[in-house]
Length: 222
Image 1 (tube, one colour):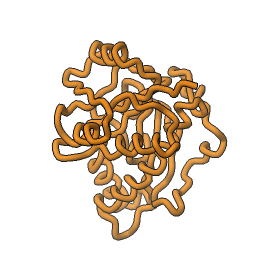
Image 2: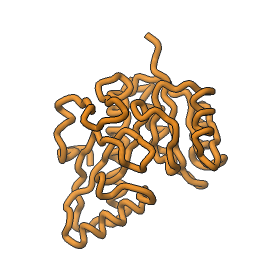
Image 3: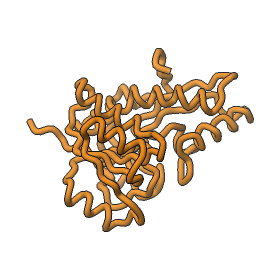
């Protein structure tokens, strides 16, 4: 059986980033993610994502502004992905099929999502809310992608406890560990059709019963 073609979108930074992309690639070699990674797209022509892509032998595609419908259409037409995974992609997504495009987010949705809420910005907001006594946990979330930031239906949510002595950096490190553990496993469920929706109605979301349990801690993982 032909493997599903998976295209990854990852921004990274000029100095680094792209660890989620590399983790997905390694997971295909370990059998956790049964898909063919056909390439990685970054809005940075040079930087951490490209360095990892070159080292891993994964095709790299630079996708610069304006990140328009037409630009995404060109990517789809030329690369022909079956599924797309955003892993630290910080630009608006246009023209990708919401049924087959998913994202991972390092905070509880919808409270800590939306434009500008990524990476350390999420962890700083979470720690501020914790300091006000509003929350006791953050989360690793995965959701389908629509054209509004972090508004597609969330299909995976696992809590990460906030410790009293946490900083945004220490919390972010534990969240990242949880992301690396779960992203390939849950992405595989999307690719294999165990998690799906019709791309329009959030009520059409199908998730295996075990993963319908929200607010379950990642015991032994974070």
